[in-house]
Length: 331
Image 1 (cartoon, rainbow, N blue to C red):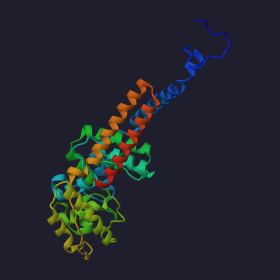
Image 2 (cartoon, rainbow, N blue to C red):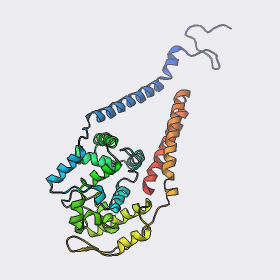
Image 3 (cartoon, rainbow, N blue to C red):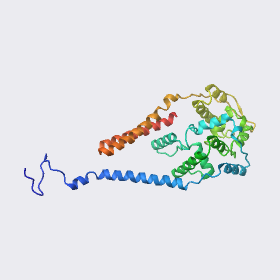
Image 4 (tube, rainbow, N blue to C red):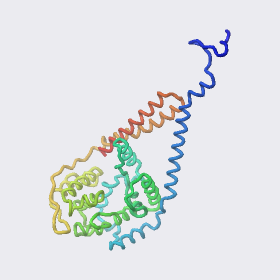
């Protein structure tokens, strides 16, 4: 079979191989995608290393807490002198996996990321108790930028590697701000209820735990109705985690609660509905599983180099983020 003359057209169905120029042009988008992924990975690694290196070392945390309390006329209270009910209320409300993570909560972060991505906001913090402690003691301010959150995480990991969970919780309870000038649990107990931290029952403990999220908005002296509504959320979290029963939670809401200024929080009619945890976490589990499947799909797509495979991997990734976002509503 004679080859076509140089410069002539090749008929349809010809077995002629494409020129080297055409072969080089076709995978150009693939190379650009690979370069972009590698570049993003390198950039992310650099940012993480920079955050770790520039984050302050958590030196002498107990002395830092004592110094802060001394500046505001407060008193340090050991964990054994703090009501276990308050400890449980704060863990259930602020960091439900406190005893299972090592400074950062990957499940909480995935929820926060999925929620923010689906709602185009940066409203979800996903901060653990240890990260909050790191921010209060070593970073300060109200900066919630992604860079600051990375530094919070870096300091939190270092704190967790040096301190026990009991010590971290003790330092947190003595340093967190409860509003109305009350720093630490001793000042808050006396300010709002006129009792020592060891005498905080379920009703009082659940009110105090609810203040932390918004000290001015949930101040029981200034915002009694909002404080009670927030208390319902705290008690619901405690029932969810098995720290109290539904009937005990309802009893904490149905009686007037005396306050330190002589007034009282009025009773509130509410329902405490313990979520069915066997099903409530299914969207999160499914979402995280799909996320792993999406990553595996992308690796396979890179090997076979087919656009449809990349599209499938992207679709699986989007579906995983959607499921994780839904889990925010039920967790």
